Length: 139
Image (cartoon, rainbow, N blue to C red; front, top):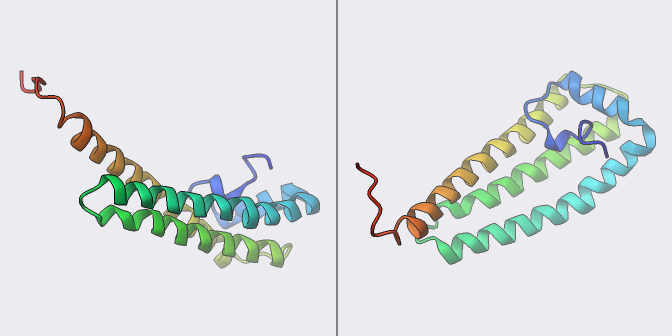
């Protein structure tokens, strides 16, 4: 799958861009895309959920960030459901369905970004800077 055609790696696409991408795929690629999002992407979602939830439980005293991997999983699952609906209804176009798919994709990436920044800053603050007693940050 060419990266420029896959909807799940895009950010804030329009319904027209979604349908242009589906048109560019052709029937066989659309069929393969459906298989990929339900086999490979679902496996990736489960691994991501388990791995990062495990990191949260293991390394963090505050369990508040543990919700983020689960939220990403839910958003990714909703995104896959919406893309599946787009693929099943194709060539019939629905602006509303295209925008809902984009909403889930964009929301997923925003949560991933926030989670990544939060997780990295937590690790730096609690495992790197905490162990550096001779840092002179206020010169």
